[in-house]
Length: 293
Image (cartoon, rainbow, N blue to C red; front, side):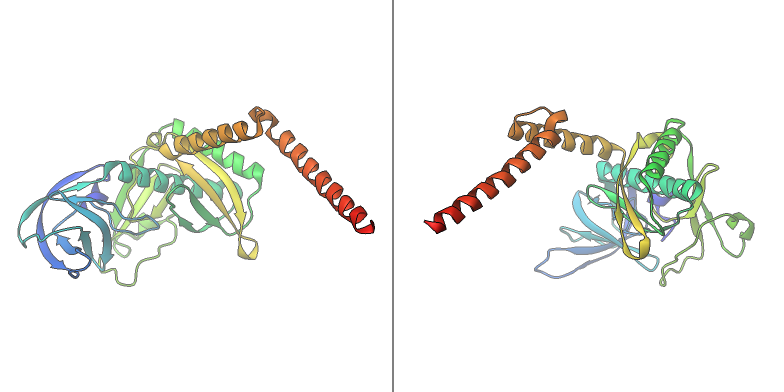
């Protein structure tokens, strides 16, 4: 699947289309499998989770690809083949997924360009995401990449998508990253996402039109992994605000518990640890003295 309405225009949120197939999955689940002539709901792929939304007001809880088919799993039914239906996407979820995915492309390009680190995989998580790299990343490199990524976001650089045929359009594939085509993919065309003068990579996912739509991105931490590789965790878009809000709430809770302002948290914790250690030593000494009586 590479030419769905959601891939031709990631900012298309509503579509009128036709039902091709509708079948129950079982009486217990109350799920119906629906295939449409076209859809604005993206199926899981390219490291990106699927969209959710509705078909004629019926909630769609999962969308998946099977070969060149896009299957929707609806919480209710039935729908009738050839029926005209309206498909709507969960816009906040779509926006969030686009922001994280486009940020991953931007960050992976800069990690390669500035640090000579290749992205071997990535995961778009519920709260934070990570990029797996083929080597270690220092704190200095991490800050450099973050600053440059946000500079590109402020420049509001264009993000475009193209579809090519690998054999017919060989020149168009110069400089494009590796392709991992699913074994059951039947469409020979390859969809390429391009960040102007910075990155060109095959990708089936949904993306922002311009980097300015990310707002900002932040590299949070690195996590050592097998064989000297690492994972760098990041957030982008509205997740940056949510992450900061969570940190602030946590900071306020710790301030209340320790009864000292934020800048003094570490000193207060160090003091409490020393007091606890001293208390244990005193209790041990008291027990030893009591045993001699």
